[in-house]
Image 1 (cartoon, rainbow, N blue to C red):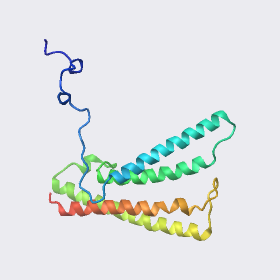
Image 2 (cartoon, rainbow, N blue to C red):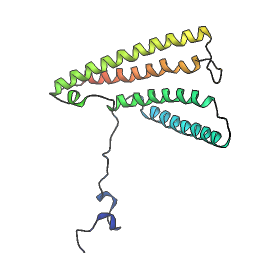
Image 3 (cartoon, helix red, strand yellow):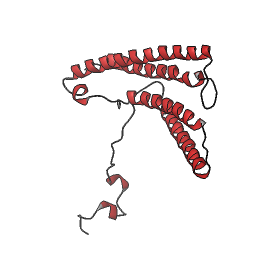
Image 4 (cartoon, rainbow, N blue to C red):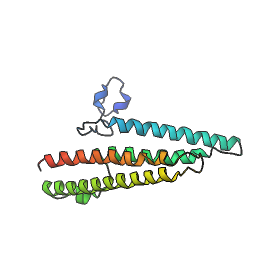
Length: 182
């Protein structure tokens, strides 16, 4: 037999001889598992797909639509953004300028990472505080949603909760970064 044959055409070759397309990425060590946010994100995506598909079917077969789908979808997209954002920070997959973040000496990279984490932490603390104030105002004013008519603070209360969750994740990252040496 010739050695120039393709591995895919040889059924007797072991599976470990074929290299994976994407490298295996392991999560950094964290106290609270990232699978929590991962599963929340998966469930939200599935719910969004089902809601949207149901609304498309209703619009196709009737002259009406579910008025509540847009309201629920917007809420779910916000929660999805926050939960996926939390894992992106911990996995170091957030948007950044790699020329600055990954360039230079290890000491420079460490300093830039610490500054970035501090700014991010301050942002999410501020977001949590200000959105909690917004929830309090919506509760006091008795605002209701336009489509379903439920109190808007039911939607808004998740923003300070999720912003606090991201702030805690970023604080953990900052603590690990401060303990590490370049």
